Length: 264
Image (tube, rainbow, N blue to C red; front, side, top):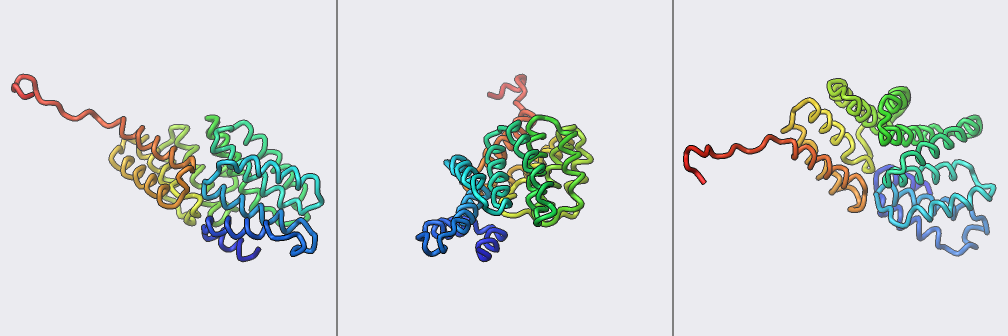
């Protein structure tokens, strides 16, 4: 399990999913009749699929696993991880109100468990889901407050995610100069799961400032990065393509020949 966690952190999603599924399928006697390692292996497999973006048929499995965990005495942090993954899938399906509710419930549970276990990473992941859900509902000022208020204590890919959400929330408010300045702040590199996010937010800021050529090049770079590192069904590929199309559509029309010259 420790090796799976290390591979997950380095973005080896395909390998983690395959190995975790194999572990979950091992005969129960291997696990001394305890179901918890099987639940953990299934959680690893589903987490890897969600992060990679291979999300078809994942939501029903996440919901089945959540029900099993709720009815058991398993470590409650496993259930919280499953619920965060469920929120991420719902974000991709643009069910923003559901995600807001789910994230709020997770954060309440985190508050109850904080004295028992280390749940800071789960809390930050839930806060990122909440900020993204708020952006999806055009509640950009609220999203800014969530991202800005928690960025200082985030590290690694969670800091990268919250920085990107802060830039996105500023773009949504038309504060493009501030968004550009925030995008240039020193921030840890995003994980493979975050591929293309920061470039998309930067492209939107550049476009808002009227710097179309830079915006187009940045959006194209974001799309190429998504294509390289994410599963073809990841919703971010669609979002990156839509952004590039939107920026390209705002280009000025090409010069047309003057009718008086007789050119055809």
